[in-house]
Image (cartoon, rainbow, N blue to C red; front, side, top):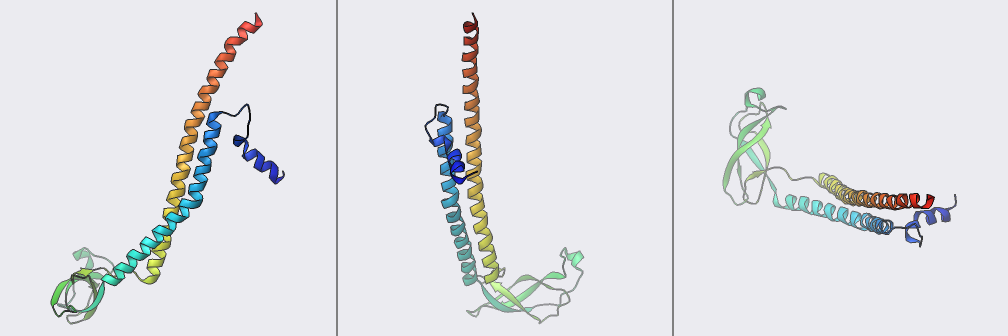
Length: 193
């Protein structure tokens, strides 16, 4: 089959045709809009989501600071008895903030650590314990995932909208077809007599 024939067959809804219905033209317009949304809004949503994710990760990296803390007491006990697994147990640590104030808090540390051991903790702008910020590689992976997921969500929503509209249009076409068959069926009896 030639390419010109394929294009002409795919664009039949746009041509003048006595069999073309309003629903066919409406479906063609909806399909065109869906393709534009997929081609334009999908990539834009992906880029914006990736940028927002990367910006959020950079902001977390800028707001969080590492500090060296000292373990207050020996870490002992079974991880099963304390409710933790993976060889890490919550223990109290103390650290000095950049402004000279002393702070303490609990963080998970490796079991069997001794008092006085040094561990790295992450603090926020109020010198409260927080999780470590994502690395540049983690932030890149997260940004790529968020961009792809956002783009996929736009494409999925557009496709679902098209298929929903198509279901409604098909119902209208079937109802119109049924009505036309009833009109023709009532005329068949008159033509035979």
